[in-house]
Image (cartoon, rainbow, N blue to C red; front, side):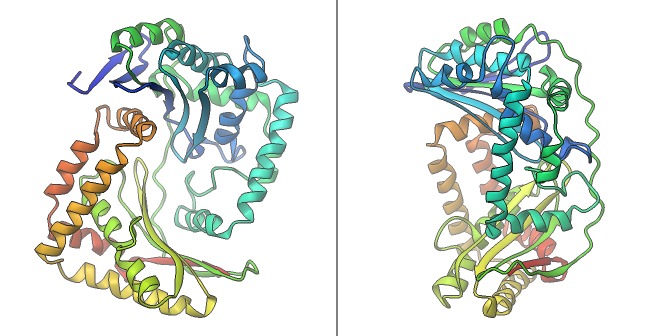
Amino acid sequence: MNQAYSIFTLPNSLRMVCRHTSGLVSYIGVAVNAGSRDEDSSHHGLAHFVEHTIFKGTARRRSWQIASRMEEVGGEINAYTSKEETMVYTNAPAGFEERAIELLADLVGGSCFPKDEIDREREVVTEEINSYLDSPSDSVYDEFEELAYAGSGLAHNILGSRDSVASLTGDDCRGFLDRYYTPANMVVYCCSPLDPQRLYRQVEKHFGSLHFPAPTHTRVAPPEMAAFDELHNRGTHQANTIVGARVFGRKDPRRFALFLLNNYLGGPCMNSRLNRELREKRGYVYTVDSNVSLMSDTGLMLIYFGSDPATVGKCRRIISNELDRLAQSRLSDTAFEKIKRQYCGQLLVSSDHVENRAMSLAKSLLYFDTIHDISTTAEHIRAVTPEEVRSVAELIAPSKCSALTLV
């Protein structure tokens, strides 16, 4: 326990993190250390399908009762799935914390996956897949990852395919839930004005009866990435391109230097280096950004841009020049201090989004067994040196990058 957070562990090994707030809204959810990476090859899309269908009926509630349980008091319940995690989360006016906790426990422990509901939701997910396929600026990421992570559970996209989703059954869903939605594999988070000890008692009351064995994760690090440079013809008017390289996993101490480099190159601000070079100076792109996606044992740094097909080569040369420059020479101390100050300021602004901050608590405890909050991250960022940024830039030097263009 520390001044800002209270961390508890139930007798059944479920962990819980509470942040006491002075707000009028409570944010409560469950983070599960399981995602699309944990599916076997015959069940692609299962983790995401489970995330959809746990809302479709429990031993105590029908789907409409689940949907309205939080909404009838002005709150909501939702979920998302990633490669390595699933989040089921609520928000509601303060005072309804136990309602949220009891509902989440019912979904995790009592979902029964009725066949008629499963069949209807299969159509919903199929439409989600169709919508995603119609958006090349989204699908280019998954196609790049299929190549970059070939031969591993990280290669296939989170939604699965229309064929794989068509084959999923209620038994498949129940088996995945029983295997991974277990106390030792989950974290409950609560950001609320309610006393943490009282929240703990409520979580123990509703989650304490769960007694499933801890899952045995069989995550295997993907094989070395073979460089590629591919053009996939999709008949689109705009070219969607990703340039990127494999990096390290989320626990590597170099990650803070990589975060800083990523933000400088193609972060969310208009003054990012690539936005200035490609959009503001030359008008080649409408969108250019970079992002870092770190897994438990590997990761990717990706630069995306959408442009006219005729300017793809020019954009790539500019990007290569920037990556070469960063890998070969250090940024000046004055410029570097500005970059760090901007990043730390962005961290502070982002902390105003209470729900995202609440989820970050759960993910931190899930992956690091401790809380790495915004102040901790800012301390690490301020300690980064120009040489450390130059060193991680070598990982994404042009000679180590792959590229994929959809056009």
